[in-house]
Structure formats: C-alpha cells, structure tokens
Image 1 (tube, rainbow, N blue to C red):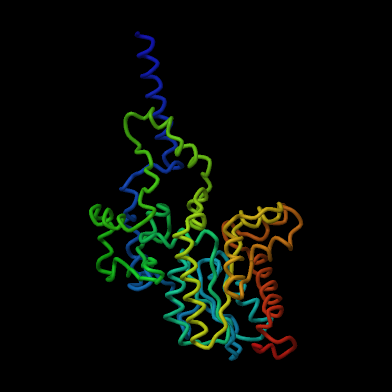
Image 2: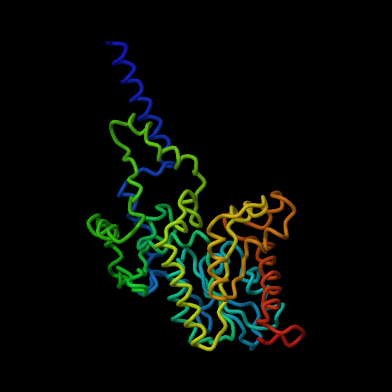
Length: 371
C-alpha cells in the first residue's frame, strides 16, 4: 500500500514539474494570457482602427505601403494579409514593387499583417473607390479561413503581436451579415484587461477554448492522459501565420461557405467598380512542401474548384513556387522565416506577371495596358 501511494505521489510530482517546465510550449487554457501586456497599449492605440480592428498607416497618397517609384499609370490595387503586405522584406523587395517595375505601372499595396480575409475585403471597400485601378486582387492563405471565426486575435494565437479585436461576418440565409468591431473607441482598449469582457467576446469567437484545453492545475497527472496535449506538443512550431496547423476549417461546410461568400462579394463589388477582380492564393511553406512532394492539401483543391465554378481569375501562388524549385532543399531560400524572402517575392512577381499575360488581363509588348 505504501509503495503504491509513493508511486502515485511521485507521478504527480513529476507531472507537475514537467508541465510547468513545458508551459511555454503547450497550450493550456489560461484566461490571463488573453490580456495584452501593459507596455503594448501605446502601440495598440497607434494601430487601432474602429472599423477594421487595426491598420498600418503610411504617409502616402492612399495610405498604401510606400512605393519606391511612381509611374503615374495606375494598374493594380492589392488587398490581403501579411503575404500581400510582404512582411519581413523592405519596400523595394515586395512582389508589388518588382511587378510594377516589370509593368512600368503603379501597383498599390494595401496589405496588412494578421488580417483575415474579412478585414481585407472591408479594407477593399474602404480604399478601392479612391484608386479605381483596372485590376484588383484579394490575397489570402489557405489558413485565412480560420481568421473568419475570430473576433479577438489573442483567442486565436495568444502570442500574437496584434492583440486587438476585429469585425467578423456571419452567413444568414445565404447573405453576409457584418458584426462590427466590438471595440469602437481607442479609449476602450483597457477593456481587454477585464475578464468579464473577454468572456463576453469569447461567446462570439470560435477559438475561445473550443478545444476545451486542459488547465495547468492539480491534479497534474491527469494531463498525461489528455490526447490534446500530445497533439499540441507535436505542433510546437506555430507562429502568427499558422497558429493552429492541426485545424482544417475547409472541411467545415459552414466555414467554407462563409469564405466563399466573402470572395464572391469581393468579385461582385470589384466588377461593379469597373475593375477586373483576381483572387490570389499565397504559398505557405507547408503548402509548397506538400505540392513539391506531389501531394495537395484539400484546401487548395476547394479553392481551385470554387474559381472554376464561378469563372474567377485565380492565381495559385503555391503552384508558382512549387514548380520553380528543385526538390525540398530549394524551398528555404524562398522564405525569411514565415514569410517570403526577397527571392520568394521576386518569384511571385514573375509568376503573377506570366499569369496576367496568360489570362489576357494585360497586353503583351511595351504598352502593357489591361486587355
């Protein structure tokens, strides 16, 4: 009896030590993680936007990312997340700058880090009426479907650099309904330190502990038998681009329908503005690796089928990168860490230029005007 009790106590003590040491790498449910650090408030206030959640601000004619060269020939406006914005590279290294030089025309970059496709669509509605370029793109990753069900970024990824709330859409009777940003004034940002307010936000957020994560508390030994623990530990390499690599909402009919409704709305409204819309699927590293191996994730197949069904111009950036590399060892130079490197951005610019020509969206030759 004494030996059995000693064994139980030993297992509990070792479990407590193990899980406290691994707490930074394992996602336990801890509501205190959802409040931003106090020293982040100033930066949060600078990027806060009442309608979009957050927004990069630049001293440029339309608030777009700075362009090293202006050609006075507006051609293309681009909207999307950090792959559209081109995180981790300089202004002159973005795919938009490389493409603009090839076309000798202006390509506007309205991308924004950590945006969901819903926010990118809303920013298109705000900013595109001022540029009215002949072509307009909405860029997204296969992962971006996850962001549509999120209203507070830290519920989705608690180590995010953008600890702010955002608007989201729901699909009701086949129509998009907009739920505005829960925080409408910069003075209300301190509400994010109120646990009651955070629980209320969680009622409208898919990611607020929908996995029913274990809590780091006694008895610690019970966590050993929680299969979710080992799933999260297997995926320790998560980041702001892919916080939940084990999730695939493209398998969920409701989430997929919401994503498709937003893409439809973008295409319809772009045409209403007299522009030609283009959907751009950007290449997460794991998507490119799988394509190089000869496989494909179901999400990319859904996107291709959707574009074919509706006759949309759809650029497959995954294929564009995969077909240009010689095996898996050719992929790392195309990325800085999570985002495309200068070489990766140049590859996207080259492939997108070829795509525009092949689709008849620009004319060949020195004029390069939209067809």
